[in-house]
Length: 195
Length: 269
Image (cartoon, rainbow over all chains, first blue to last red; front, side, top):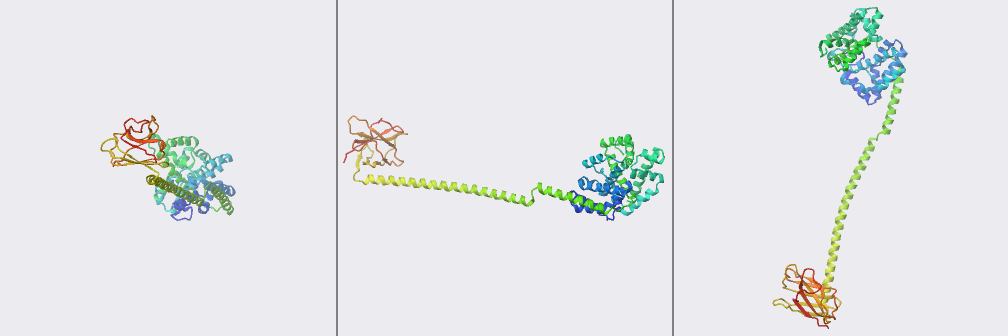
């Protein structure tokens, strides 16, 4: 599974994450510490890639893990694996920061305990080999046309909309929409093929 | 694919871009409105699309955050955990105290049952004691009565009166009258008075023309025996000429309503 590729964990990593998340709900500091050790590099790497500045990235990562500590009960292990959930949370926070959302708005979200939306692991996830999956994602993305890959990366790391991407790449809106959707479908089919 | 068919296909095509966050506002609002209708297929597709999008994170190289970040986070988390523990311990009863409460409640229950059992025992003992006292009192009374009767019978100062019956076939009654201890009358083989009627003793005064003085009523037992003790005779021995017994209505009469069945003269000593 790709998620485990992000960390040097074994196949039991998902269930271990779930167990740690349950302990986190019980306010066990040791569980928090272990989750941080397991995933902070991936979270920080993603946030840093989005924000492009170490100090700001660390500030956001701190917010993300504190939000995890305070709202761990919002993670539902039955609906998906822990790391995709955490990374989606991290990306949303980083993009929020990138969009210069007002501090007041972020506080409102903190108070509301807003976390990442429910992520459903696809049926083929359990059949994925971890390292092969990560390599396959990179491989599949590399196989895309440079502009198509660029469009997806702008959407994912910069949080741009179709219109913004079209404007930035000087391409028709319809083309950008097709690039993005087809690229994601190719990624999905490629991962299914190795499952 | 949406269950609503081709009409909903455009929504399904938007799901991946929505998960990526690249939909423009108009399309995003339309899809969110559709998702709000509870379309199960699109919701499932969205969940999988979110997972797929999350895989793109591997395109970002992992990086080590500073040790300071780790230190700050753990310090904050430990502080909040300790605060939570303090609040928890301050607002909840520790388990040992629940045990103590349970023990106290058990002890109270045990004491309550013991007290109730003790109260029952005391009541039973008190009842037995009362019964015993009553028995002793009754025995003492009977003893005193028997002693009194014995004295009346044996004291030479007592007057002996024989009361023959005015009716044929009825036995005589025997009377012993002690001036201070009372009158003792006894008899055997007497027929019971009819119905609820009763026998009543009368003292006939010596004074001419004076009315008979009513005394106690009695009925012989099932064997026809009786023994009547009149502890406080209504008239003095010296003032009494004779004794008579009549049959009267239940409860007795102030004056005789029938002729005497038994009668006997009191001869003073």
